Length: 139
Image (tube, rainbow, N blue to C red; front, side, top):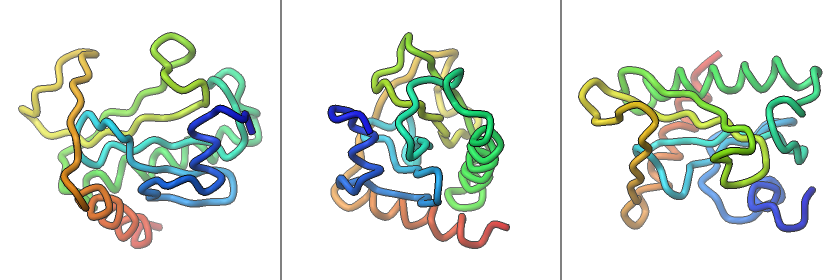
C-alpha cells in the first residue's frame, strides 16, 4: 500500500460505495462520475499503471471489468458502457483503475470530454446497491 494513495485507502476500508469486493480486486463508484453508476475497478495491491499489472492478475482484472460492463446494462438499464484506463497522463490517482461508465445513445458524451456530475444525498448508495445486486445475479 502507498500511504497517500486514496484507492489504497478504499481497499483498506475508507468510506466508499463499493460494488465489487473480491480477493484481488475492488470496484467502487467514482466520486465525480461521468454518468451515475460510473465505477472504478482497482487491484487491491498498489499497482501504478496497466503495464505494471502482474501477468497473474491480468485475466482476473479483465474478467471483473467484463462483469462490471455487463451490469451497467443489467443493473442500471444502460444500453452499453465506456471502459478506459489512463496510464500516468490524465491518471488523477496513481493506482491502476479501470473506468466502467454506463452509456446510452444520445447521452452527450463526445470523444474524450468527460463532463462530471454529482450524486444527490443517498443516491450513490442506491446505485451501488443496484450494481451489487446485478453482480450477484451474474455468473
